[in-house]
Length: 273
Image (tube, rainbow, N blue to C red; front, side, top):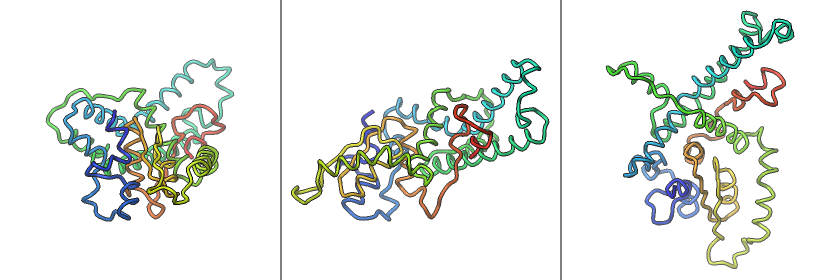
């Protein structure tokens, strides 16, 4: 738990500093040899339980597209087999199997799956873990044909939470929600912890539940020394990717974070957006 909490900005004794702390002391880090991902740090440890949990988390990321498609197909099947014919007639054409509208809807959903899985695979590769394509190739060429281990619903829900958190914290579309969530905190910090130079060093802050890292980075950008604590490996892997060069305005990704949502959906296009 301690290692995961300190992953965004390790202590000064740690050999591998994260982006925020390293920039504060030494300028922008252009030496790739000095960066070691949280996944690699975990694999280098002697903690078998922690390594097993890391692999479970990565499995859930790798299986995202499969789960999304199976979940969608399962919901549609339950709906179509549970409603009486008198009610089925009121369904939109896009939800009636075999119609051109339904086929077009499914095509858009599958495109969204691919977008999300591509982002996730890029993230896993950046932090040094096999992605879904790597595992597929390994299974294809493996002589051992054992039973596949599927991820839990709990872990899969965390993958969806990561995608939605990324939109809030790092997209233009999430700017309004981000401002409502973080601006009161930023204003309060600047009010009660002044950067007027009266201290020998900038005030040191800790961000509990740092998620995918935007609040911690905003505080650092204002001149504070910041450590972001996060218990979830799902969030840590995503923040590692964002904060250490995996994604930038020059190399943006497109994701569809609401693909698996069933609430607050006005039309099918909302989920694939």
